[in-house]
Amino acid sequence: MKSAAYCVKLILIILACGCLLTACSGFEFFSAEQLIRPPKLTGENALIQKAFELAVGKDVMLVSPISGEYRSAFVQFDIDGDSFEENLVFYTTVDSPNEAHIHFLKYDGENWFSFGDITGNGSDVYDVRFFDLDRNGSHEIAVRWAVADSQKNKTLSLYKLAASGSGTGKETEVLTLSVIPMYDYIVDDFDLDGQNELLYSTSNSSDQEQPFRISLIKLNPDNASFEFVCEVQLSSSVTAPVNYISDTDGGVYRLFIDCQNYDGSYMTEILYYDKENSVLSRMQSEEGANLTDSTIRSSGLLSRDVNNDKKIEIPVERKYKGSVSIDYETGTETPMILICYSKITDNLMVPAEASYFYSPDNSFRFKMEDFTETYIAVYDINGSQLRFFMPDNVSTPVFTVNYVEAADANGKSEFRVRIYDAENEDLNE
Image (cartoon, rainbow, N blue to C red; front, side, top):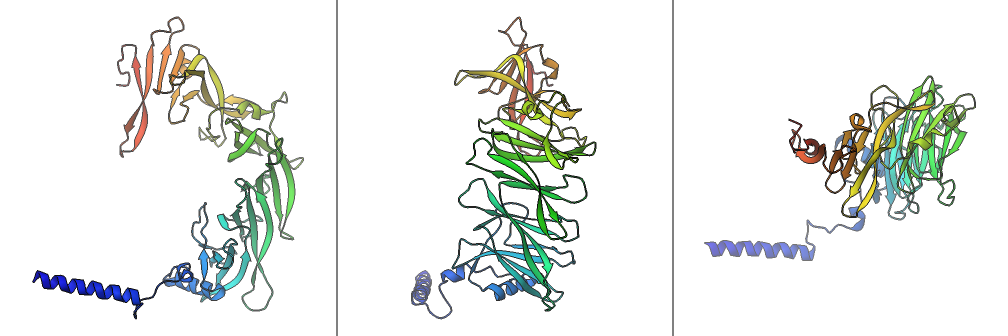
């Protein structure tokens, strides 16, 4: 019986292989064109795909945004504020695989129909966002395209939907408002007039003295065009802005741009909007000193609202007198650095909370305020151990702080601080 069953299985396998080799009825090899068609969808999505394929054909490659909130090639959003979502589809064609397109679809209450197709400014879509820049209830479309020959700059394209006046009953067209080569951008109400502006940074790699500049533009709702407001050059040491955060103080908009410098250090460019002159300016002390200079630090910590007072605090670095960080593998000794988050009050940088020692990789910190100028501290980089000594006895530590790996309540790995006295008694218990 086993031999007969084995023979039957063998015959079935041979027949199946014969079908594959002879392309028998019911089986087809997929062509390259079929492999790059959009996936088959169901329900409402199937209607969207059908309308898309009727307009552009089936032999296309869908392109999904690399970053941002929207990561699908099909992006739905109520752009014009009529309670019906429009659909943006990003794709390339077989003939032009390095040229991305946006196809626009709209729902009229019964069916999806095509109303526009635009060739983009790159082969890859970096991200997609929507803004109501002129506060009229409809949104502008911001698409950032990746530029193949630049690791820094991208291209930002801004689009707007408008009535076409064609008399077809489907009177919507897509206007290109602006195409901007840039590195990064933010949208905010900088002049606090109730209308958002767009601020973008641009990398000029050919200009080593002024590699980055910040430009501010505003959309004129009367003619749907952008108007230049002002421009600010970032410090010549900046290799990349990494974080933008803002607050308002006394009716003044303040912008804090955390930047990485060419030497690996960090700094915070501090700007404010000067309403009288309609420009962004650097914030200075009463004596005229640039407050940005006081923010240069080795740590990559970012500016933030640390005490929930709706004001931004900046990480400010200072050396802990007489103390060192020691790398015993290389024998390198460097000053031990403390970070104190500080705020700007009356054009002065004022500490907002206690100083902390951050480990070089910022994985843990230790409050140092109680020990400042009282003990000499030595941090062992390799052993993740911080030892405190009395100034008149640097051979025996008063106590030791160890950073040990442990698990939290959910089993996730984390670092915890354990403090021991000179006799190695655990002071945490």
